[in-house]
Length: 152
Image (cartoon, rainbow, N blue to C red; front, side):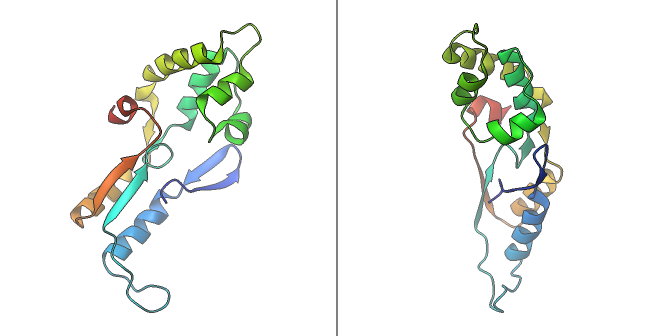
């Protein structure tokens, strides 16, 4: 699973892309399994987009903070928001005089589009994709994000 994260604090999350890359490439090349037998070759790899191929959490946090008109600090974002749907976050953290969460969700989508260029690729992702491609491994991206965001 490419979306597993190592967390040593709520504000610092490190993707395991490099470790999974090493595992995937070793398996592709037929490394022995732990029980001494041959590992089954990898035929396909599915990548979650956010947190695996790109590091988007900070950009998402800034977008939500902007639309909500209040800062969601790192601790709040990583412990109470990551993994929840946008409407749930907007409903919980919107100010009393703010528009309904559904309207904020529309504003959030607009704000997010303006931040696409701020989303950073995960270090090592290009080499991993190249290695998998060279090995003839099929790849696909799975995400709950909008296709426009992923294609950008």
